[in-house]
Amino acid sequence: MSRLIFYVFLLLSSVAFSNAYNFSAYAPPSIVLDNKYFIEIEQEIRVGFRLFDASSVNKDSKTIKYQNLQYTSDPPKVKVPRVVANKDKLYLFGINGNDFFETTVMFSFDINERIWRELKDINMPSHLSYNQEEQFVGPDSSGNAYLLYNDNNVMLTFNTETLKWNEYTIQSFVLTGYAFYSWYSATILPDGRIIYIGGRFGDSTGTNYVDAQMNQVYVYDTTTNNWSTQATSGTVPGPRNSHSASLTSDGRIIVYGGVTANNIPSDPSLVVLDTTNYAWSSPQVTNPIGSVWLAPSVIIDNSMFLYVGINSTTSVWYAFNKVFMLDTSTYTWNALDPVAIDDNENIYSNGNHQISDGINSMNKGDPLTIILIIVLIVISSIFILMLAGVTFYKWYQVKYHPQPPNDQKLSHV
Image 1 (cartoon, rainbow, N blue to C red):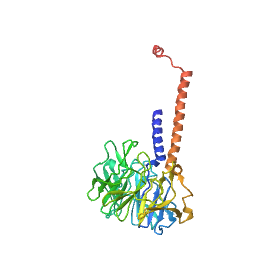
Image 2: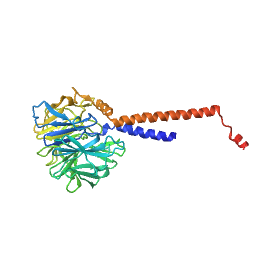
Image 3: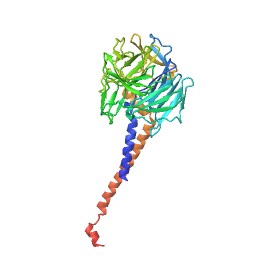
Image 4: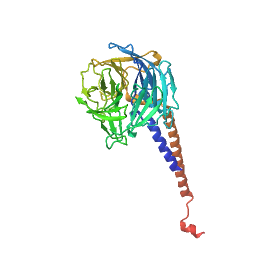
């Protein structure tokens, strides 16, 4: 009995702490709707869903307005979310944050109705892992969005019009001795090719990593479901993961930020890949904002918006409370203060927050974690009391009711 309780104690401990400390396996997704809004979806750095209006912002703007959908639409609790949009509707896919067994769940959200709806009976996949950071890329001209699960040699597709999932087996390109490829950026081109840049390869234990070099990129052709490796030229930048990448209308992929597999800020911070000849360049940047990571980016018209993120320029990493806007023609940065349409919905305070504050607020707001910790405390208390009781009982028996030796027992038979 004591052994059974001990194993239950270990199981609950592992589940509770995996829920409390899975922050490191999270990167906020980025999404554009109607080519004038972008959605900030983050449930671990700061809990919430925010809809930013970029339609009235210009290069001289100092603020950007947002609506906090966390308070207006009863948003779902989804861990490590993947999100894709089609016109005025977004689709959120991930791990059910209210489910002990962490099953997959999917929701839709219409920016006009401001209502979340759970999508059921759509044959959702269950290929989810905290070790990988796949995000939806797309949709393409047919409405398909793509999710790479290369540890299973699988490419998943979700059609944002028919709401149908499909799965394709792909050849592996993970380096020998490693199990998965993660923390890359994926950018879809108008012809349907997806460009995977940077990232890192990890082993099966999830503790050892090596950088994917930037002298080549991985290309997935969505029409043939085939992979190829494309060599790059120009001034090849340093390796990086947890960076952002956004495609301009003239075929440039602007890559920003990130860190190496050893958590060293990538150098230089801003680099550009010309998809017509796969040549790298490092343009001169005006008003640089420092090195950041876990900062998704979106492009609306000629402006790239960078938000959420961690600033790793100083010795202390900060989750910044600004929205940074880059003029993609001059590479000039402008910092915008987020302003809530309704003051009651303001989630930002003056200054930056250390990332530890974000982790603390995440854990305080996670009911599943709180419940598991309470259960763990109760079970461990019972285990300790039972163990103490058994120990006391054995001591009492030995001291006050000693057993005769075996030869004496036999002599009385």
